[in-house]
Image (cartoon, rainbow, N blue to C red; front, side, top):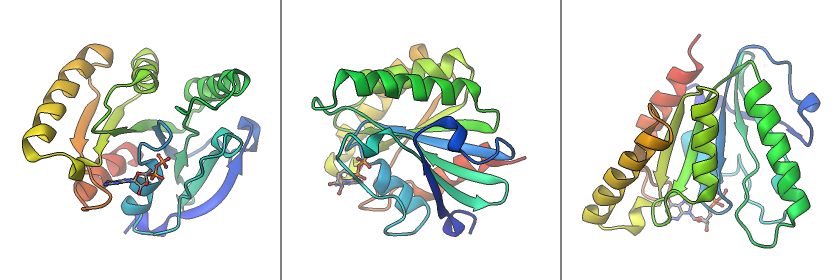
Amino acid sequence: ALFRRARFRLAAHELHQLPADTGAEVAFAGRSNAGKSSALNRICDQVGLARTSKTPGRTQQLVVFELDEQRRLIDLPGYGYAKVPTGLRDHWRELIDAYLTGRQSLRGVVLIMDSRHPLKDFDRLMLQYCRDIELPCHVLMTKVDKLSRGEAARTLLATRREMGTLCPGATIQPFSALDKVGIDEARQVIGAFLAP
Ligand code: GDP
């Protein structure tokens, strides 16, 4: 029931706007359109919790969802659209870098990857960050409803193998917000990240 209690707390443009750096939080990352909002909404069982937005301005925010006084989910800004100007990308990098390396309460990253387009540059960058700062990373290979069973199994294996070099220890599971595949597994992993 923990995730159903998720409530929007605030959207931060800068790190100092985040809630006090105590307790535990898990960050959600993913390329624009990978399916991050849909995954968050499914995991929290709330239709309109995380909102999708395709505008570059909004992609620069860290959105905080509170589970209880000590636990939070953070929706990190994604990118991946060609129309995002270079300056914004630099800002994105700085913001993400400062957040990932400086946030004491950060316990893990959930990386959302579209199963039809796995391990894009964005994903590689996130996995390497996690490896470098020794942060647990769990990948939701989402939209598996778009693949046949065979394709999904092959993609999972190939992606898992390549992740072994990019970020040893990172885990991956199939997921579909549409068909509700992998919701319980995702909740268990995230719950374990957030455990005291
Ligand atoms: P975000 O930009 O990463 O937050 O992505 P969204 O959650 O807004 O999803 C982007 C698009 O992918 C939307 O059109 C969603 O309806 C679609 N989508 C998200 N998750 C799934 C899924 O599990 N299966 C399918 N078929 N489509 C999905």
